[in-house]
Amino acid sequence: MARTKDSTQTSSASTESFNFESITTSLASALSSADSDAAQRMQTLTLVRQARLAQLSRTAASLKAQFGSKDPGVINAEAAVTAETNTVARLTVARQELTTPALQVAAKGWALQGRVYDSSLTPLPNMTVFLVDAANTFQQQFGFAYTDQTGYFLISVAEAGARSSNDQPIFLEVADAKSRPVYLSDSPVEPVPGVPLYQRIVLASGGKPIGDPHKAIRGTALPARTKKK
Image (tube, rainbow, N blue to C red; front, top):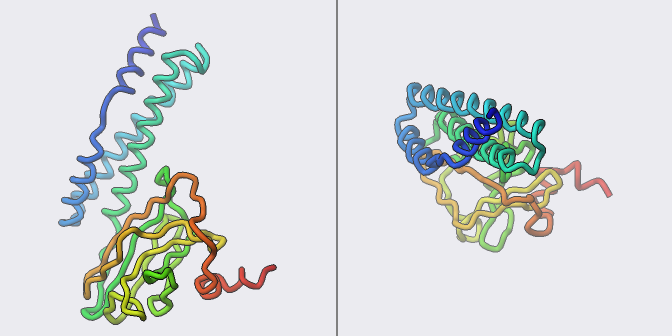
């Protein structure tokens, strides 16, 4: 009887749908007001889902120990854990964005901030974020940024300028710790004078390089690495 009860509970949990679109909508609304109450609500929701994840994980481990990994109840329980893990990750990302301090940008300047995550929404530190033109040439005048332990980066420009030195659109690119490009934005970055922009970057599954290392960004942002043979 205990097996039937546990299996029924986990099967029900695995089929429960969680509307991720509602998270995005709520986040957009909260970000527009950026008040402490919205941040607190997001934190509370995250804690609730984390507690649920812990419960599902315990149930899955117990079933697996009793019936083995191929048992249908165990498979359903582990699927529920995976789904809830994804939910918690998305909520954590949303709360990070919501609690990111507001930037003060000069009237003639602009700023681009954001975070870099892997495909499972784990923050990626020590990534290099920079801007390139349509020919994929590093635009040194805009500088570059490293991501911190939360995946956060900030590129701040004193004078407004939305285009490259060749008067071409600019794109956001990310290089890994070996200066290999792993991300290139599909659409141009369009800075607005006096307004900070926020961009969430999620790398494709596997995180494989998308091209050859940029000598310019490697030499500028990672000079110590260029000396190694």
